[in-house]
Image 1 (cartoon, one colour):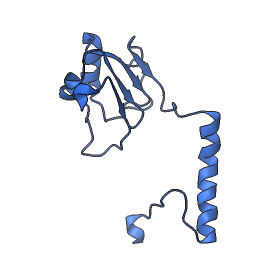
Image 2 (cartoon, helix red, strand yellow):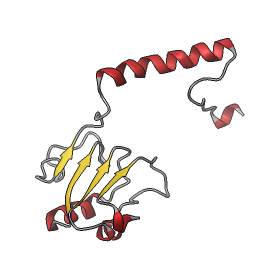
Image 3 (cartoon, one colour):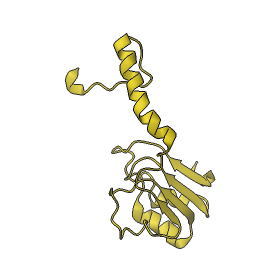
Length: 129
C-alpha cells in the first residue's frame, strides 16, 4: 500500500503496536515526492526518519497536527521546516466542529437518560465491570 500512496494520511490511535508505525523503512517505501499527513497521534511517526525524508527530498511535504512532544518546543526541527506544516493539534477546529464538540455529548446524555442508544459508544472503565 505504501508504494502506491502519493498521500498517506494517518487516523489511528497510538498503541504499543502503532508507535513509530511510520519509520524510515515505511517512508522509503513511499513514492518519491509523496506527502505524509498525521491528523491522529504523536508517536505514530518516527520524527527523525521523517526529517531525513524531508531533507533528502524523498517526501515533498508533511502536514502534522501532532508531534510526539506536545506542545512542541519552538526549536523543534519540524516546526520551522520549509516542507512541513505543523499545527498544535487543532486542525479540526472550525465553527461547526466546536458546536458539535458541545452538542454530541449532550445528545448522548439525553439518549441514555431516555433509555435509547447514544450516537457514540460509551466506554466503561475496566474497574467498573
